[in-house]
Structures are given as C-alpha cells and as structure tokens.
Length: 193
Image (spheres, one colour):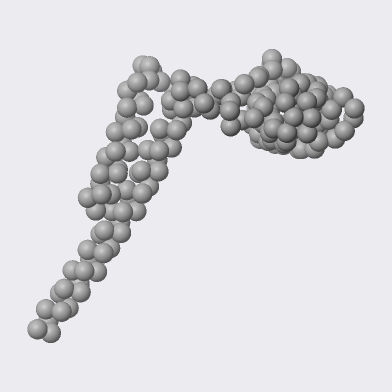
C-alpha cells in the first residue's frame, strides 16, 4: 500500500510540474499539442465545398520508409464526411478511405521516391476547411525526437503520470484486499487456539 501511495504521489507531482511550467490561463490547446505538431510537413488550409474535391501532393524523398499522413478537418461538424484516395503520378492506387472524424491518421510504406496525390472529396453537406499533414519515417520525426516539442514536453510526462496513477491505485486496492484477507485469516485462526 505504501508503494501504491508513493506512485500516486509521484503521478501528482509529475502532473503538477507540467501545470506549473505552463503559462497562466492555460487552456486545452496549450497543454495538448495540435495534431499538426506531430508532423514535419503541413499543408495550407484549404476549403472544400460540399461535393467537390481537392488534391494535395507530397513528394517522398526516400524509398522503403513509412509515410505517416493525416487529415485534419479544422471546422468539423457532426455530419462532415470525406473520402480520401491516394495515387501516384502514374495512376497507381495506394488506398481509399472514407472518414467521418475530425482527425484521420494513417501510414503506408513508400515503395520508391515518388510524388503521391491525396485526393480529398467532401461528402458532407457543408463546406469544410482541411489541412493535410505528412511525415516520412515517423520514428525519426522532429516532432517526436525534439526534446522541446510539445509532444515530448507535455504528452509523454502526462502519459507517465497516468500510468503511475493507475498502477498506484491497483497496488493500493490490492494491498487493502490482502490486508482484509490476512486480518480475517488471523482472526479465524485465533478462534481455534
């Protein structure tokens, strides 16, 4: 139980240190980085009217590496829907996706250095404003390896604090259960002596 309490205190200390280092009047957007901060290349905002499509292009410089890409609907509303199809300049297809969420992230392995087209069709009833995001070889991405990135400064310590909190609660509950069982076992044994 003491170890569980120590883990909970450590989790609260980590969370407090993140909050203490944040600027005054912190909001959710300041604490949690935008999805764009996880990518190395982000397109300009584009507005796509209902029923229309817009094509984003990305030139991969390296072959046989993963290309992580994402779509962020900035002004998302409940009935928004997009269809995304990926091809190269030769017409080879690399996948089609239909999505109803504000943020959509996928990846595929780039077979050769090439230009890839991401055709985004608005299937919703109203215009949407979107950004496309790209990162080649995400394991070596600046967003994930830069020690000053919002992801490394906020998300990883908060995930660690959450993990410590959960483990601490499990340890305390287990300790309480074992203490009660041990107390009852000791009480039952004393009756027979």
